[in-house]
Length: 478
Image 1 (spheres, rainbow, N blue to C red):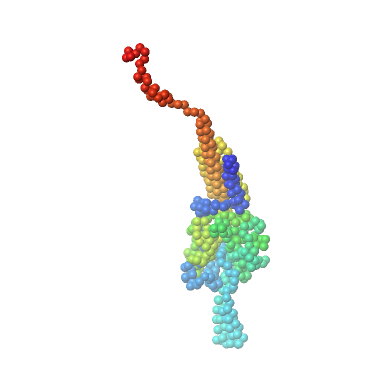
Image 2: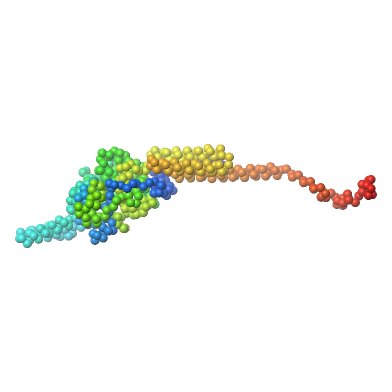
């Protein structure tokens, strides 16, 4: 462990191990990189441009106040909403609501029983009884929310419903002829796996144009970074709401759309929209305005309309990088926009290989260049330049081709190799300094000659002043 070469090798090995771990775990962002990715996609990448053919009809706080209802809305209210939307002839109405259970029929059953007794008793044959029976029948018809909603779906003709993939097998699988049908993707490679599907009521499904799953993928920190375009159930790939909508709207482009949907095992990283990316219309305005409303006609006619709840505390608390509490219907909307334009971020396949090669190249270049550096400062400068070049390369790949190459593994490896080199060079300088001290300590120091006129300290006592008291022969002072 004290070998400098071993320390440098361990530093580079840690960086490579992180790169391999990121690839094994499904690509970037890897361990410790999520915050970096969140900052890049929310601050550095330009957001999606405002769309012109998508619009959100939201059940917001104003709609609930105007309707005087609590969530969930009654089927009769939903039927009125879809009947109103049908007047504007939208290209598609994508519903982020699951109608998986029938409404309570206690009052309807009681009314039908009264109507039946009225008819069997003969009272319906009288003028007053016939009027009463006709009125009761009309009221029962209006209050049958499930039947009215089915009729409304048929009137729109382009309704795409949502379903839920379940972790248990309590849900069933759609039967042949159901609008929710599997797509030709490799189900064995999909990231999202489930055991069952919870679908809408059969009459509603049969009246719909298509159907897709509403599930999203949450990372361990509760943030959504990938959108699953398909889920594996019973060995088949079932499309998400975004994929089902895209395939219905653009069947001639099904092949490239499926190719994009299969990116990163069916769940690519998402490009994020701006906060005001999707135009919004309150459901209260749709119900209050008539078909002659010019503003709603411009907003809804021949548009892809997404319908979902955005009222405070009712929609799912889905968190995107840099954003909080985003309604699920908005996630499906911009996931479909990502899909049709191909603007998804790729982190697996060739990108994984590129990340491993680039990490190894950066670390190998540092190990080679540090041997040619004459000083520790030169090593630090070279390491800093490599980090800048590595960061610029990763940023360019993210912004231009949309490839997410891991940033952290190479950076960690460079820092560890630089630290190991600093320790090795410091220890080498200490050893050289110690050797020099030992070498010069073997030789005695030369005695310094006393200055002129200074008594010799080595002379015997009493001789110091003898020259001053004696007279030389021939001295005239003798």
